[in-house]
Image (tube, rainbow, N blue to C red):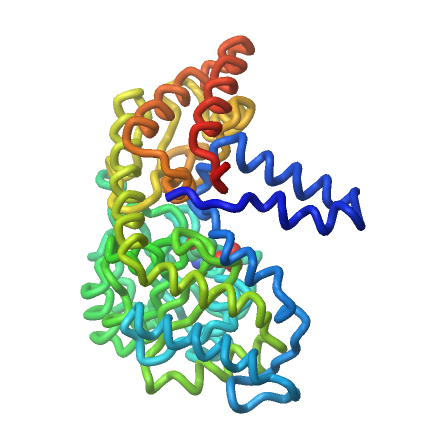
Length: 415
Ligand SMILES: *Cc1c(COP(=O)(O)O)cnc(C)c1O
């Protein structure tokens, strides 16, 4: 599903006025087009989303909510936000949606602000097992203001240890339980989390920042029927602008809205909300459903090919768009792997490994699938990984040239 209208045209306006910044932006456009974007959290938005982001709605202040603003002249801002909210509630079957959070972390902050008081106990996946910073890192507000109890994955299977989740919940009686991860390649068992939350009288918060795009396309289970609050981003598999979103029950709607504004944010970014509306419109189409299923199929193909090359896959595979792997069997750690792959034009992240020493690599298939790559390209990418990991300069140069050729055949913004 490659898209037309290269962003280069948009840059022409800037080039005339500020060549210094224009050069930086066109350099970034070239970098995205000429290297493989395998960061699991990234994607290519459509030109329509970029157009909304670059629109004059960027100039508008609109504190408050549609019909109840603290500023004048909000009729079009209201219309944009109403469309975004309607599309989100319809697409995910939620009672209520708030599209104002500036990011995924802001969405989580709002959820905690709505449900918790400082010092409350929260059960969430431990950071070394795949939890996000907002799931209790001492470097983040979450770890500073709340008492996080971590659950983890089984050392043998790499799967969430649900017996541990239930035992910790019974022992600590948390106010909220968080499910969702930055690197877990399987779906949380939302029904099971719900049952545990009900047993101990806790709220269930699903942080679906990663899989929400798969949910939109029917390629992942929907947490909305199970969770009291669902936090998400709009820029990962969902392919929208950078930003966050909160979905919740009718009962919590007012608390969530007040937790976003005025408790944790001021004026919303209305151009971003318009771009979220565009992305949600795109995500409601049959084409996006097909896309989401292709993303998962490609991750499975790539995972199997990487396993065949010798990578040790967390949980042995994937049900999602992302793959977590330990490259140790190939003689390198995650950091070295990321550096060598990057030198060969393949961009991805390192991540914590639940029970190993050192770090692994985390990658995803959302962006390459948007470019129109298919299963044969996934197999080719796995082979390129192994070649690049040897770290021999000549071979790295050869892989880089092959990556360049591959990306030329699948330009992210068409030709
Ligand atoms: C990406 C992510 C976030 C945060 O999103 P930002 O927009 O970077 O703040 C939060 N939680 C999880 C599980 C994520 O994967």
